[in-house]
Image 1 (cartoon, rainbow, N blue to C red):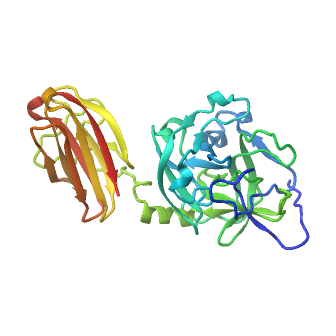
Image 2: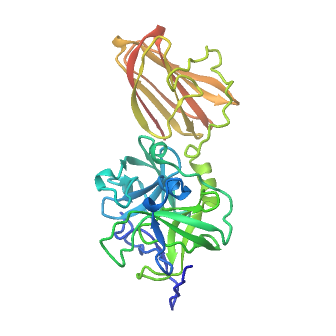
Image 3: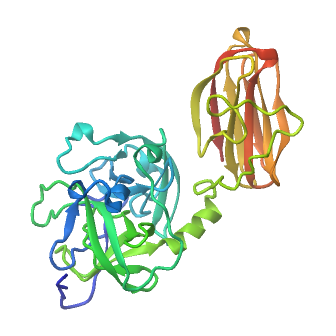
Length: 385
């Protein structure tokens, strides 16, 4: 049972940014709150089947170029979420390092770094930021499930975060930990008594019932610079999820409702052999990226897809040497369950490129193939603004 420590005087709301303050954060006080006795636990001490340990795999240690740090977590295969007060702009991502296995007993050489360099966006009021990472680390290490329903007062929760009690030992290791607690109030924020400190900013707050993320941790009340206080606070996902769906729909895009009977109108069905050889198996491109691929047989085709909002400019380029095999591509849009042809890029020269300003939101597909069965390697690049 926690013993609440009450402090005299005015409550202080403090934002959690780490022992050092990230880029652009010098005006923010840096201290979340340990409530009563320290009651967090190292994730390595949990049994492998414990849902808390399973969920902890999606949590990351974020270190900034100036020595500041925060916590983050993957909400999809390639999208990392943390606080806006940690990442206020794209410049804060420069030099940022992200580690997936900063855990007790794990040497720094085995912390599993991932590359997160593409700033997606953020929101000051909801205090969250999104960054795109290469290599689909969410698929490799784990990703969380967000719960957009209302949080219940008095419910059990837990926070997974990167921290240690540096008020007691400044040189302690901020390894990955789990803090259990209860919801102790709901206003604009969700309040809870689970222990955190500066550096826990951006941590996922999980329901202990279904182990979904119900809030993102961002602040503490009371204690000033002592590190001890009355309660901690997070922004509820019931507010964040609708905002993401409205402003960054590609982040949480779900293709589970795709109709398996859908085919390429007017075209023979694409063969399904090695991954992205059909509309249904198209490689999803969330944000700007490039990759080297190949058309390896007369029947081989490659499909790619992305979600684009109305008014965005979509660019897709295929680079290759024409004298080694002529490659072309076609653009489609998914409309009412059908793949509607939009445009083709066909020439007898090196490379193919298209730039489209979209007139409506939706999924766009790219089909790369060899002219008259030509085979060749190629590099594709993609962006949308």
